[in-house]
Length: 168
Image 1 (cartoon, helix red, strand yellow):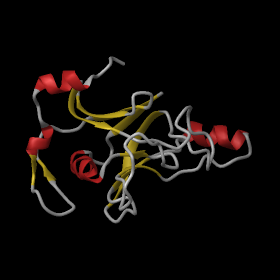
Image 2 (cartoon, one colour; image 1 turned 180 degrees about the horizontal axis):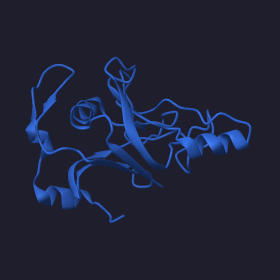
Image 3 (cartoon, one colour; image 1 turned 90 degrees about the vertical axis):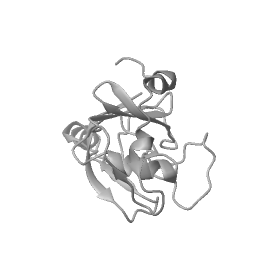
Image 4 (cartoon, helix red, strand yellow; image 1 turned 180 degrees about the vertical axis):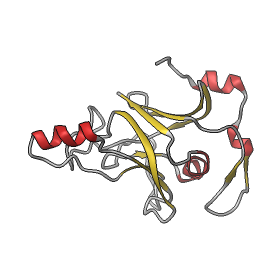
């Protein structure tokens, strides 16, 4: 995959945020270009909302408290790697708003079963909730976290069925 940089996205001048309407409340309306793919680059701690190859938004993210490596088992504190899809939404999340990633897939379940363990589940892209956090700390149980105000954008822009590619 080609590297997507913050500078490159800024140069495009899309400003997807400007396309978001409504300043108050928890929910926003989005009428800009469709998000066709979400890319999470774990090493860089960045998430990209893309329309084709064009970045619409870029966010710094926090990951599982054991960020290195692919999630394999319930409770391992790792964020999965690979291709997944958004499969659900939670407007009442304990972490402000959240959209679900369809981890585990068949390969994840088979691997965990071959070791006599559960692969875990309930992996989301979510906000920080009501707790203050430092941007530099990984703290989730395997999810991808952004600030609450950023999660408002993500929740409005990313629809169910959108592919999510998570890279080491």
